[in-house]
Image (cartoon, rainbow, N blue to C red; front, side, top):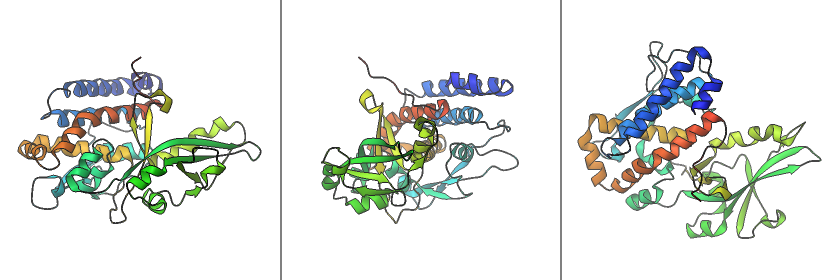
Length: 329
């Protein structure tokens, strides 16, 4: 990330961006020891990392008085996850909303001012600790792992498109129909199911193929970024140590029709890290109650493991290529 700042940020803003990056690293390393303080220090690490990312992504304005762009909201009496939401806030008085600007610069929709995201709709969107959430709530599985992502080329027509493969056994295990996978996975407009036998891949897999191909004129590699960039809105991922999978594991997330707050993965994680940091800062007794309550196992897992996942995602965005921790040989 330091290299990205040095090579991509103008000389006038480079010292500022490097200082944000250095402070983010200090907060992040300081957060590694104690569960009770880790959420707050982790949030400020990512807030500063977000400011450095904005400079790399070309934001030219003032960051001195930038604001979080998020606030807590109590929606029902109580002190657990069910009782709160995170509210998106636009900047005021010329102050920038870091949250909104980061999402906008990454190509995601800018959140509406005062839009409320219930914590109980954000938590099911987290891969890390998902099964602990299921155990706490008695809800069904919402993530389906992708076995293979295939880029297909028609060299005669000069077109590219994607195919996604999932295990039929996973769908059967969780009683997920093919129709539900496509609709609740947010893929209905862009993907359709095709016969896996026609693709030459594993017959135990289900194949989803893009409906519209991407045309190119020169080399197919010239438009690969255009092919994969829109999938950031569609797929979830975790960082792995498996080189054969490109150090990434991808998932389709199922969002029930009744829940209207499906967010890009980075957006939902940022909201939750902000929320836990705010609780630790202002109501530490509530945080103690959370970790002892029905969501305690999820909260501990999220705080213990999710920050490293988000760190590598943001590093990949800053460097415009996948960044990973390689497997130990």
